[in-house]
Image 1 (tube, rainbow, N blue to C red):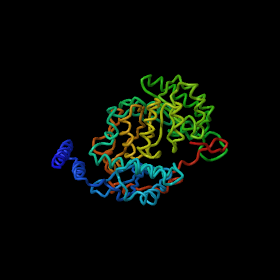
Image 2: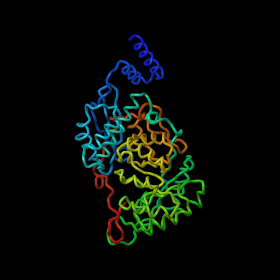
Image 3: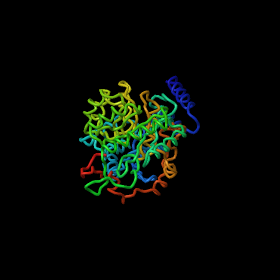
Image 4: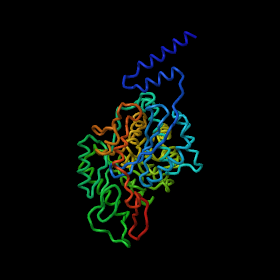
Length: 444
């Protein structure tokens, strides 16, 4: 008996010696474990809403019954932001309060099955926030950044691509050069079309193309011609060293997409994103054999039945799922492992409507996987960094995680309250409408 006590004390002392002085909470956890104290339980779940860059962000905070132990997760769903808070407070909080905070997989499965009709967009975002918050708690418990819990680094930092856009081609080229001067090796090139509401770039010129309506207008063949003019100029002015990406954003027909991926081969894109919509995934079986252009897909996916066939059959090269939409870190690391076996790489969706918590979750996963491809970059303004202390840092075209426990980010709720949601926006933050010249609504 005495020997076991001495051995237990020695193990606890040895483990505690590995911790730095600043990791006082982790040291307390080691001592608690040695005394057989219970695991933390979920005491409260709350929602923090803010819009420091004009985009509505939603963060879930999970608080435990152990003083000072809590975590944050991104649950942002900008287009239907008002639905996330009630999903968290009215459904997930009553379900989870009192349950263990350290059983992440079990909690994810419980929440995933609790609504019966699974993969609803608003619930997916709510459960993403909870899941990421539990991983943050796990890291804080251990006194380690989350990437260490996932197996440690497979790379030093995360390679990025920036958004080089403009109303005309000259502006896109100039913006690309600005990124290159910062050390970026990848840029997404998008250009406006005169008179047309394109995607990812300001509208080119002021004249309006002829149409039978007053809504924003888009014409498919005009967009395609403009895009190829951009690629030609980019290769001429930027050279062969820079990697070019482009997002079709599902706005053309599948047969136009088939022609696009074949004709764009000569420009050697890093990838072509969303050539077809999620409703037309069968077309990948026809598109893939006819072109070597790398294909990326997935930012609109909710359901594993959408991405699983594309990865299993190697019909895409890059998976683009949205961590705060697909259910959090727990499912993302599983699908990343699936992609590793089939050499399908990651390019997680990282636009402005992901909070710094969500971006940091992607960075931690990116650091640990061997099928990492590229990460979408969104800079954080001063107001965002005032709210989210410890944002990932960009240096030389790479993104770096900090070394603090968990995600390494603290949320200043007082600062968040100074940047509230706006609810006077068009459709309360929705996409709005874009129509063909004849008046037909198109996907966007």
